[in-house]
Image (cartoon, rainbow, N blue to C red; front, side, top):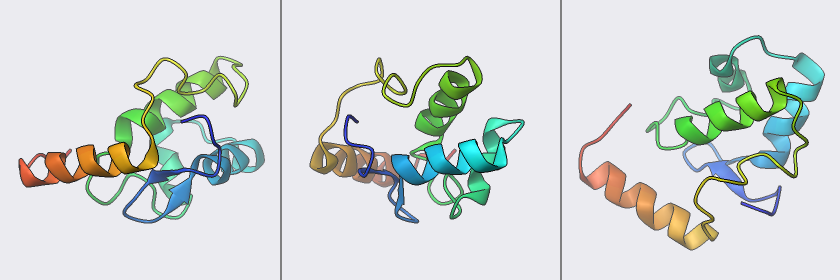
Length: 93
């Protein structure tokens, strides 16, 4: 996800930009506190690995441009399609 305005959490429509700003302002101590940003990660669970990675990168001092860089590059439609398959398979985190 190169565009910071792309949605990370599709359930609650939370963008990468919102999450990065939330971390900058609130400085969460653990990744699960990202749920305070619009409920991110509390719906279907599909975005939890992305949230964890975003938090880890920020915690390690990576810049927002580096965050999620080595996770699969997905265009929004592919991200949504894979999430739908995840839900159909009955996989909830």
